[in-house]
Every structure is written in C-alpha cells, then in structure tokens.
Image (cartoon, rainbow, N blue to C red; front, side, top):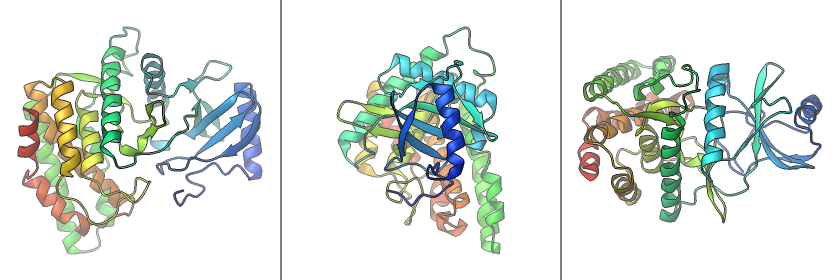
Amino acid sequence: MANLNDTDLLITSTDGFNNLKSVLESLYGFKIQRTHYPNSISLTSRKAILETNKGPYFLKEKPRYCSEDTLIQRSSLFQDFCSQTTPHVPKIIKTTENNYFFEFENRKFFLSEYIEGGSFNGSEDDIEKMLDVMKSLNLAGKKFMMNQDIPNSITKKFDSYEIATLIPEIIKYEKTEGDKLIFNKIIKILSALKSEYNLIGNDTYIMAHSDCILFNFIFNKNQTYLIDFDNAKMLPRIHDLAEFFVSATMLNYLGEITNLKKPVFIKPYQRFEKIILDYYKEKFNLSRKEALLFPIIVDIVWLWTLCLSILKEDYELSDIEDALETIENKNNREEITKALT
C-alpha cells in the first residue's frame, strides 16, 4: 500500500468517523459492518471502502478544487450516464433523497459501487484493455452531448490549454535566478502552445473524462473500469487520448501512486507509444485537424503534469529543464504526427 495519511484516507478508527457513519447509514439505508482501504490510490482526496449489509461501496470525498455544485453535477451526470451505457464505469449510488452527493462538515462526499481489482501491471495487454475502455468512453462522451435536456452550464466548452491554468502558481518555487529563468521559459512555452492550438483550431468536442491516467483504471478478471470522474468537462475529442498517451509513455511514476520520480523522461516509451498511436489511428478515425492538434495537446498535458509535479514537490524547477527544451523544440512532434497520418 502507498504511504497514506489522514489527507488521503477517511480514518475510520477515530471518534469523528462515528458521526459520518450515522449520516451515511441514514442517507443510504444500510448498516456499515466494517471499513478498509484500497491497495493503491491516487493521493488527491480522502476515501474508504465500506462493507455494508447491502454489499461493498466506495466512499470518496470530493476534492475542494472540484466541489462546486456545477462541477459535481457535471461529473455525476456523466459518470451516471457512462455506467448505464458502458460496462466500464462503476455506478454512483444515490441517496434515499435521490441525490448524487451529500455534504458533511462543509465537505462533499459521494458513494459508488466498489470494484475490487488491481492496478496497471505494466503489460501490453493492460494497455490494450485501457484503450478499449477509452474507445467506449469516447463514444459515450459523444452520445452524452446529444441529450437536449442537459443544462448549458454542463456543456460549457473548454480547450485543452485551460487545464494548465495553475501553472503560474509554481512561481512560489523559485529559489534562484536560474529558477526564475526556467519559470519564465515555462510561461513562454505555454503561450506558444496556446497560439499553435488556436491556429489549428478544434471543432469536435465531447464530454471527456479529463483525467485518463494509468491509476484511474481498475482491472479484474471480468472487466476493466475507469474511475474518478471529478474533472469531467467538455473538451476536444482527442484530449483524453492525449492524456492517456502522456500518462502511459512519458511519466516516470513512483510505484503505485501518481507522484513522479527521477529521471524525468524526455521521449515517449517506444514500446507503448507504437501500440497506442496505432490504436488511435485504426480505431478513432481521426480527422486531419485532430492528427495535427494531437501532438500539441500532448505537449500541453505533459507541460502541465511536469509543473504539477513541482506543486506536489516531486521535482524542482531545475529537474524539468531538459523536458522543457524538448517541448520548446518540438522534438517529439514529428514522430507522433507521422504515426497518426
């Protein structure tokens, strides 16, 4: 198990949990018999597994950055739709009052069915299973947008560079004049990527998962599942594809958690790169515009993830300097574009 603490887990052995337990049993009409925790999780919000007289459930606290009502409504509606239209998404359990989430001590929580399984094992077979899930979710994202009853606030369009809005916050990690130069380079690169993105433009948006990383997939003997819809939003159809590509080929994870370790990769892992890009070309029928836009979104996602690793204190600014040079010089673009066209 990862090294977890009370910011990651609902510590169910404390007196404070008894109040939450009472609320849960009242809202969902079950009796909690025992609690335990996932073997591997991403460290973004507190969670626990509840064993009840009605079966096991997964309890998760909504991270503060996505706990605003519209964001919860968006993620809940999309996860609910995907769980009904695909076999790859756990079902959200509604309260007895038919709500997707509840509030407790100024924090918001939701419950879903618990899927027992393992995480990515590093095999090509698991890569292909995840790609099949993404294909299914891509279609679901398109169908979701056809519902005329969805509020406009849910279908607001975002562009891929908007995921990187927190990048300026890494200024607080400047320690030296060299760090200041690196920070300025990051801002310059992000601006250039945004300009390139807008020059090509995008006209195909779908409701996207928007966090398609390796750790959000669960594998058991019967099925592969995608979890954690907190970031769901209307994005370019290829956004999730780019996020998965970066997660699977360009990041050096620290064991079974989302934190990163050194060295910082500067080229995609070729073994998985070919599998993924061949699958995209064969199964997603990308337009010419999408094929040209894809490597730009890859660089945007990669840049944002590197900067996120600084905010999480995995890296210092100086650690990502070579990767920044790679992005600025477009070193990986040609090979990716060639594979998709």
